[in-house]
Length: 406
Ligand code: SF4
Image (cartoon, rainbow, N blue to C red; front, side):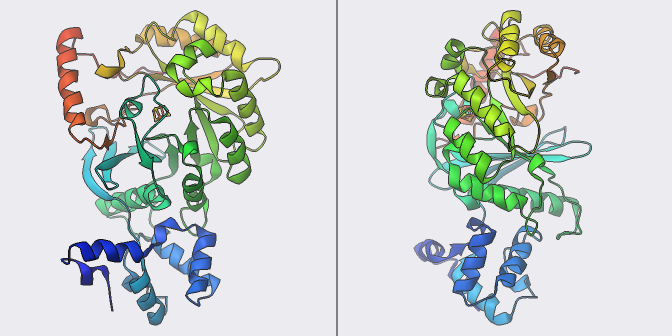
């Protein structure tokens, strides 16, 4: 039987061979049925195959013993199951685990697992880099390289779920304890600017023969691509988070440049429309707390007015994110008492508000630090050197996140 091993060691031949193999991680349930049809197989074979891939983490057709030998042989010469390869794998003292994954041509992306008492959340990336260039985001500062394919997006969940199980010696398959119970698309990239692969990956996350996650447990975070928010509501309405970060258009134009194209009134109207289809009855607004920029009492009151606008009142929660400073941003994190006062104004107005506890700070996995390594892998080192310099200048807490009890 032919397998990838037959081609290892032949240099360029391996690349040519891989290019003609279909990566089954790229296919959603319907596409997999069609693919099996092309091989002369019945639809139930696609379901079996899908379970082997997404529930047992199989990458070798030989282990799929309930598939006919002839089918396994066919698959091994025409298909593969390959996720981006792991460049590095770090676990923080608080249990947060971060993988750096190679997506080719000098691009790498980051995937972060955040364990909590009753759940495990995976934060995944949808693009290598990001073109939106939000002022407070280290990913944006590195520019945009390319969109990720379906296999590169779902491959992060596939890799992480089964790596976690292997590490903890947990049985593979649906009987083993699931490690990832929630997925957030909040890593590198703007998911709605890589729409089709993102939605295909979402469908796999929700499929009962794959990960079977409920729509409430999968959250897509967008900076506000209005037409695509509407499209998502029709195609695959998962929970929605919006990176808001400002209470008026002038401020948001400077922080989230996409606002110039889709200003706040349009964004709020899109959020309201989305709620008719959303699995939760609120939108989560993310708000990065930037000292002296967007964190005054006046801003908080303006936010209340924005979401309570009589024409576009949006049922929502706020998640206040203490900014993780990085040298190139020229921004600082709001002080803890300021964040608390800001939160109090929102809560006094009856809006559920949380202050995000930052996790994985010691492995650079905290929010806004998912910089990945786009093109130039020396930049993380550079950034860390600069951080040391800034800490010497501004005090040892520069760039560190202090947990704020909520
Ligand atoms: S915050 Fe999100 S949308 Fe903005 S630059 Fe960063 S990754 Fe892109």
